[in-house]
Image (cartoon, rainbow over all chains, first blue to last red; front, side, top):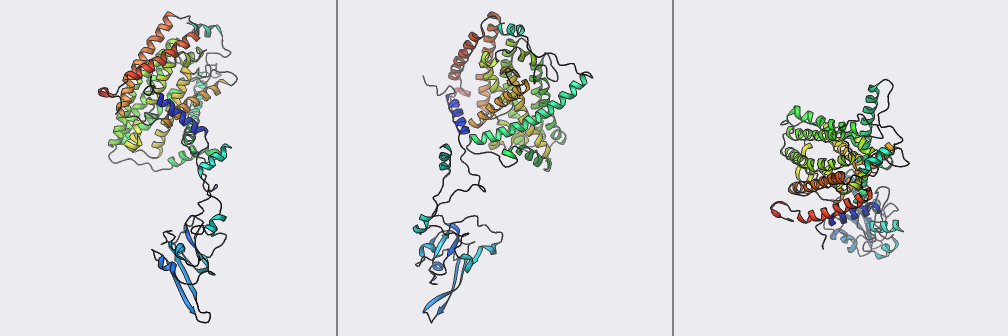
Length: 166
Length: 373
């Protein structure tokens, strides 16, 4: 005798809800608790290294948005380019990561941080020293596995539940 | 019958008549009016808290937890917010009816609490027709809802109100019939007497009655899965679409006050009201009320909303015949075996309930003999 039509479905459903009541909720109290984001995240800012950069402007050429502006001057004595201005309008940036992949000298990185909203559009334009890596602006492991290895593993909400159960 | 005799033979430690207040009846009236209003407001806040946190946890989230410790002040914050909101009356609204509707919906809910015993004899008015009074009064809230739907001058409001009237008219019948079973068992209509007679909670002696009453009560106060009158996915917000500010707060209050009132009535009728060991009676009453309310929240979280034809079919083809059979069986038990041992009756009644529900589920069909859609 099948009980499918005798309200057994309701009882099953009730059992499911009560089990969820006793379970640890799958949520994160955001500003206080933060999960580790993906190690290879393409955060919404660009990290630039002045030392490694040769001023070849490959990044500017690759950028589909044309958000990178680079001005260089010839240093005839040392026979190389010198970067006079490196300016990124992160408002245009679509986080595609093409500039990072294109850079032949590994001088560009995607940012690992988030919460980078600004109140003014003008603040989105970052130039020169604002783009350097700092403890507030860590580099993401995107396209750079060596950096990715050093970053903490990404935490998932599912892991939080199993953590609680132990 | 046996239960009645037991109650008479074991005199309870507390008195049945209301205490003789110094200064006469007016002090009794004043005291209980204040107590009832405070009780209702606090219980509603507790109910909103339980509903939102409990439902949140059942949906794998936390629910409001920012306002005050554990989010306890969330209902207060909501109330303050809604009080400060602008009161908008639509141009096409019938102004007087639109204004009166929340009041008429709210007053009867408050009046239900007048006959609910908090402990032995501790109630505003120990009416000898207590439960009849409750049935009569609780239907008046529907008039308020219909006035809101009509007075708003909005088709969605009117649709919601019409659905509410249809649901209440249909579900009143199984509800009253299952109450009669309890009344037969207790031999009294007074709420206090019904509790005094419950040496064994009537949920055991009347399991089918409890089942029917619970479903009918859920439908009567438009709790999910029967919340057709404010089905947000179909009717914006149903009858209170056009309400804002304090008037909306009144409807919100009515919704939860009705749920609490129905929980309290179920507690009184089926869960032996204020009776229980160790704890003070009023605390037992509140605890049991919240337990019943929690079951309502539980069903609300679990079940999806029914359609209007399913709602009507459930009332007329499932609950109504079962309520009649329940009444018949109860009447036979009270008349023919008045001295039967309670535990035999309990076993018989639970078996009868299981058989009847399975049997009637097999017969249950929607319109034109459809089983499913």
